[in-house]
Image (cartoon, rainbow, N blue to C red; front, side, top):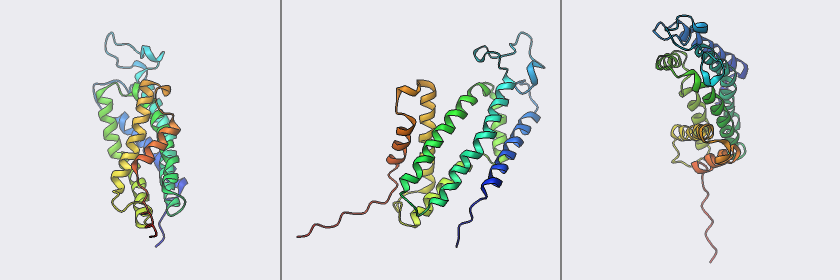
Length: 218
């Protein structure tokens, strides 16, 4: 039976719609935090309007910038994961996963950099978690297509039979996230490059089925 691939354009539009819903959800939550209140309205007495370290960026602007980046980058990232299913049974499994790992490092590096100034408030963090649940844009949206691809390759015998697709998908994404996290805090020149990091992440998962060597002729 043919595998139903999602329409790339519809998938991207749906993802952008959900990010917009997330933004609306976060704005409509009541609370004592003013992070999503425009330009200092409702600020507490003596509270600074902007983050000094961000040269005039207000808390509201930081959240808006993060959501705008997410709306632009998340559809592209999810499409990269969805497109893996087109590669099932073609080429080498590691070669198929390599550009995904590289794209994952890029995506997490950008998103984490934008998220840091946006989530200094515990209440905003809680609202964001609730919005992720409401819009179903949590980690499962990334894990599922990657796990589906690995499961398909396992059925084809191109991935080792003892590989657990969902666990392996989590590990690959975690490796991408970790590389981006360390790069952001320690610096890009202190460890592996993004290209080399992607190669290491994929290689050390040891997903490809190993063909036993032929017995030596006596």
